[in-house]
Image (cartoon, rainbow over all chains, first blue to last red; front, side, top):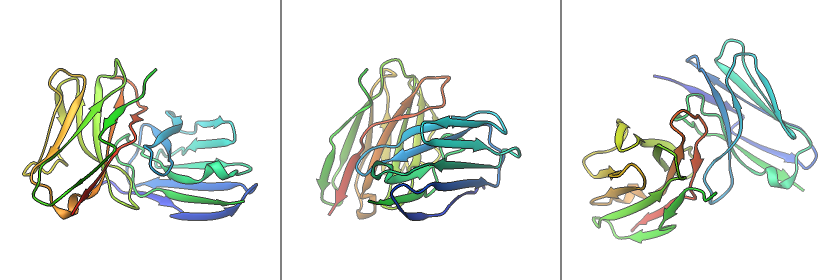
Length: 106
Length: 113
């Protein structure tokens, strides 16, 4: 079956630091979506990637869809306390994996 | 624009009791999803509807779980009877038929005692 690996599982960083997380899949994806979930809320879409090699930015967030269509990374620059949450990268829309938990220390 | 509405937000029941969750998707969204989220895990798809048709219910435990979306708008997810292991957050999401982005509701936190 399909395997989706997200790393790291958790991160503890100082406010102002940059963050990088990535996802790899055993299968080829046609899309790659990055969501963030705040405590007590549902996930919210951050960035959507639709083409292999695509590099997209949304404010302090940058994400890229790997050329092989089996991986993607998300970078957050100059982290702030509201970046705290769990980040998911469901490549085929429906399989969310375990996510990356981000803690930002003020 | 109103978001995805779910009710109740919290529910506490005793095991073997029935429970139902309600979801009203964003207006115009034909695709509706129910997810189960355990603590420390990501959402797991239970069922996906395209209009009133359940197009993917392969992960729905059909011995105790059922869902309906009779008019292709709002939906109800039911558990009967509930077990201790059903304690989790139940998330509803919707998307436009051709879109990829899912809009999630706040979820219903179920506690089975």
